Image (cartoon, rainbow, N blue to C red; front, side, top):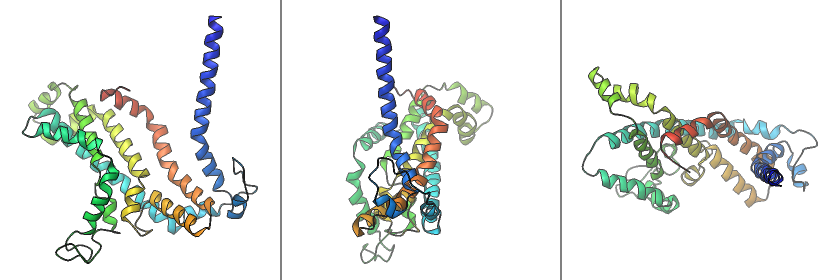
Amino acid sequence: MHNFSKKALRFVWFILMAVICMLMIYPLIYSVLGGFNSQSEFNSMGNLFPVPKKLIWNNYIFAFSSTALSPLLNTFLRTAWYTAVVLIMTILIGYVMARYEFKGKQFFMVFIIVAQVIPSVLTLIPTFVMVSHIPLVGGNDLFGNGGRGLYDSQLMLFLPLSWGYLLWPFLFMQSMKSLPLSFEEAAELDGAGFLQTILRVIVPMQKPILTVVAINVALNTWNDWMTPFLYINSTKKTTLPAYLATLTASLQNYGQKDYPKVFALATLAIIPPLFIFLFLQKYIVQGIASAGIKE
């Protein structure tokens, strides 16, 4: 009886996991299939799976056209830039916070924690007003009036506007506390300077947590549509997720309902994050363990 109960429990657990997996995979399958439909064929469908009668490649050809290629390139550049900047910031700030004592350290620690609690949506309007009224930029006068400031400037894609990135130096600092000082002292005796110690000792030994930082920042930056959507008004200057949001909104407003085109673009946008997670997920687990985070 006991063995039967265990087998029944395992069966129920298997079914539950299978259902959850299907619910998670379903949007991706729907998006891929939807991209192979024509607009008229898709609008006449009422199926849960929009299997096309004939494969239409026009939507995926559009996804690689010059119109959509600029947002895709901007997304790659923005993701690479943010990942590199946050990694450098994480290493330098986290190392100093872990190894040195200075005035204001506790205040900075509290500031990092508080910054994670404040919803980013609360800072959207103040930040928008600030960047739109920068003096002597974008046609503004000395008092920040008369122009657009940095609004619709491609520079907005590369400015760090989120306090959330301060979380990573904090986690790196926690990971550094488990690393003995003897390694750095040995490097110092060998004549290594500050940067040499960072690059030759700290970075190789903290590779798991740094990989986690890189993966998370890359995924969050790639999927970020709100920032470009809010500050950029040109297709050539925006990112792929923001372009998707703009295209979807325009289709709904003008009643064109060319959703297969949106599905093709969405499939293109999903592929890089999907590959990053599938091939690097083991490093995420290692990094979380090294940072001392328990779920």
